[in-house]
Length: 361
Image 1 (cartoon, one colour):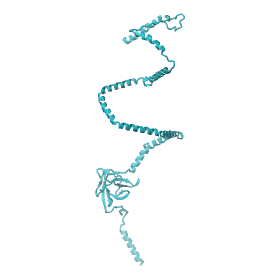
Image 2: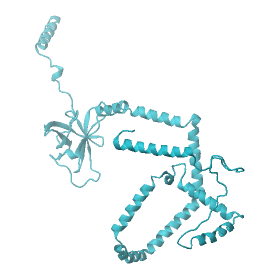
Image 3: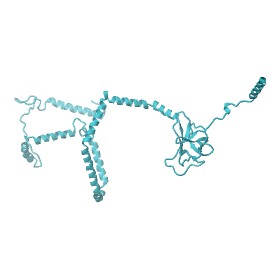
Image 4: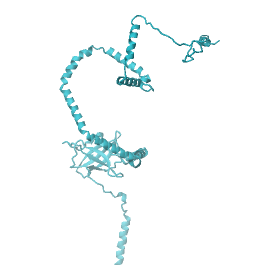
């Protein structure tokens, strides 16, 4: 009996060994499916990124379908999506490629329009390039971060923070002064709020008055328009140009600009102070000027002016008169002076000769 059982076991092992067992690569993997009740939509993307086949299609975070195929057409990616039946997508919906995590798979996120209408997308409809887009990829985010770090933005921000800290001074003295001055300014404005309100009210009243008299102002302008038209604008422009040229010439003088040690304004101020001192002085008298007026009037009453003068003391030589207390250098010409006069004339003639013939004596 035992021998018979052994024979059956051997036969069973030989039978199993004669049949080839299936390998793992031939076993179908489970995949999500939307079922037979579905409809198809296509979306045209400028760049499909790393979108895989059978990628999920989501609406508000919920799976509503999957990608069934992708083709290239006119340098764009045309993605065919299978949407579960019963999911109503209004016309104007958009599709965007997103990633669930920084290193996760790419999926298609469908977003309805802000104000959905009554029309719905049907089987075979297409979402054009204007209704599709792509979110920022991991590569783009890393590139932006690299530019942010290596481009000097962080370094400049650090310098700015350090500069603000240095400007604040030791223990924040400068910042404390700034806060104190700002508080004083706020207190001053608050104390004068009534004055500011009054000024604003007066301004508003003035504006209302001007608006109420707008008709009178328009009549005045209409009445003055003939007079304005009679003025020759060319002559007025010539006068303005001449005035501008005169101002430009006058501005070149340092005394007018006030940049010199002496200024016309300073001189006028000095004269004004002198006149003011004369006016307010109690000892001011014009008696001496009044005594001079008759001789001046008499001397200028005819076609000529007569005058009479007397020189009581005049030294005609190098030695002054006996008892003369004046300057000994005040005297008439001597022989040496005539020699000096002749020498200066000769020097002038020699220089003139050099200019004319090109050489001196």
